[in-house]
Image 1 (cartoon, helix red, strand yellow):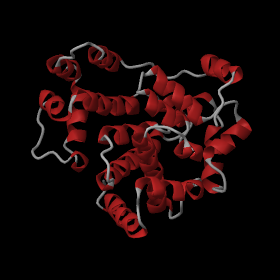
Image 2 (cartoon, helix red, strand yellow):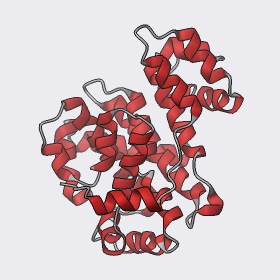
Image 3 (cartoon, one colour):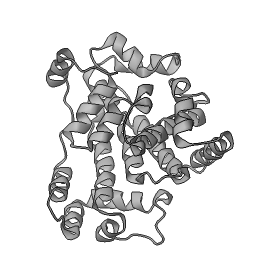
Length: 283
């Protein structure tokens, strides 16, 4: 179980410059908190930023969302997907814009490419699942679960060395190596970032505990366990496709994940083949 003590809290407050919640997201969440949120106002908030609108339409028209016809404006997007879903898509886009490469000791392009791949594979897994998990949650968690990494790379000049060690010595997870060198970990930092952006509490908990197998043994809603399990499977499939090895903590999660997703070996292999196709065709 992850513990967040006063030392960690003090370090986060004094040493980290976490990206503030974007104004667009604040406005969206404010509208959604109304007793009767208005579709027109949600579309208007998003449409006010051309870059955000274009990015949202690109995501929604991707194969993952399976639209019967091309969505051409934000009002259509909100109508088809619903206001909560569109907000999650916007959040994912805004997150990728929130960090400054000049202040970061790792390649943000490489980092976001990998996060995007995990997000895509998580959504693919969602199409195989026997119960309906909101695809927007898989998309957002895939992007956001490691968001503490760029924040750590902005805080610690030697963070890239620890990240490299974790990639080369996979007998332990990145979280393990972070604990040897720093007062906090990317999971804790990611949790605080997600919380400060007012993401759903269940998503924040998954970010905090995404290296903790006990999450899948806890008494939490099954839909949360399945969302979490889809993330862990996606992490592993991306690692196998790009690095030709299992992810560092897959051995601790494999049986729990396959059990939670009710996947047989042949179904796992089918998903793996489809995931590899994403990389072959360039996503």
